[in-house]
Amino acid sequence: MDRVTVYIVFIIASYLLGSVPTGIVVSRLMGKGDPRKSGSGNIGATNVGRTSGKLAGVLTLLGDVLKGGVPVLLSLIYYPESLFVSLVGLAAFLGHLFPVYLGFKGGKGVATGLGVMVVICPLATLLSAFVFIVTAALKKYVSLASMLAAAMLPVFMSFDPRGRNYVGMGVVVAVLVIWKHKDNIKRLVAGTENRIGGGKK
Image (cartoon, rainbow, N blue to C red; front, side, top):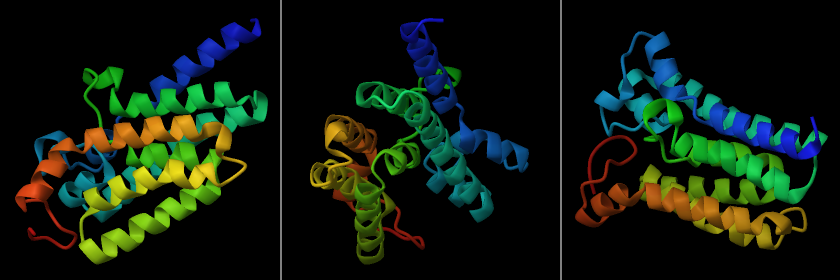
């Protein structure tokens, strides 16, 4: 196959991997049912952890991170061109947000975006993770912490030489993460958002 064909196949494979609904797979393997029918109805690690137990949540988080990180790592090893790497990362990320296996109704992309970005720009990702931890500790809202961390990611990337070629990708990821949290934003404003440890605002 020529290089263009390889690129297309790689990008499609990354999307299909990103589309794998880790939360549903983990929950069902553990005999906990479909997370879409419990809690917030989301397939991500937070809801899976709440509805199926901490172990299920941790396994979902790990799986979602890996399905973003692995294709990006492979692309950096074999074809380390920033445009191609960006397209591979976005394909995996979009697969999680709009999975073909679930009628294009997926998760919020935080963990898969983390997997993509930690491979591309670990320093900026580490700083965003710090923002997440501090916000979650102070405000007790996973959703708010996720959105702030996502918003700061492209800012941190712009100061890191390793991440500057990927700032545009970081902006796309941040915008989509925040957009997927639109219902959380409404609940935060209304004071009905779930807090870490239970309870409302």
